[in-house]
Image (cartoon, rainbow, N blue to C red):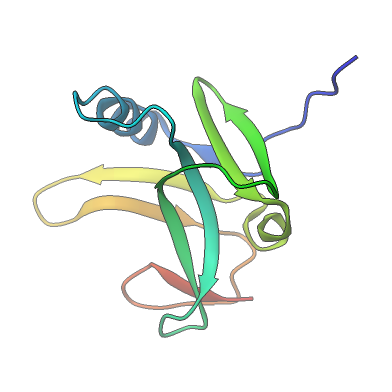
Amino acid sequence: METAVKAPVSFTISAINELKRLMNEDNFDTNQKLRVGVKGGGCSGMTYVLGFEVPQADDEVYEFESITFVMNKSHELYLYGMEIDWQGGLNSRGFTFSNPNASKTCGCGTSFAV
């Protein structure tokens, strides 16, 4: 019997709609999955990763609503409880991250410290 694992991050409706739009593009590589993660760098110490890549052997696979994504298991510590949103306005456009684990974030909203 397979155990259902709760997704460590969530997506707003607008983020789900934008991700579906990207995945439905004619040239989308269906071998790739959405990756959510972190990497060192940025003005606060760590930078969010959100993009499409071929899954790696050490990835965990999660699903939230209808979005399947992969995450390196070690990144869950930094991202658990985070919400990803899509802003489509004229002044601010792109994905935003609301991370309850971040002790400090930068002005651009793409890097953080824990």
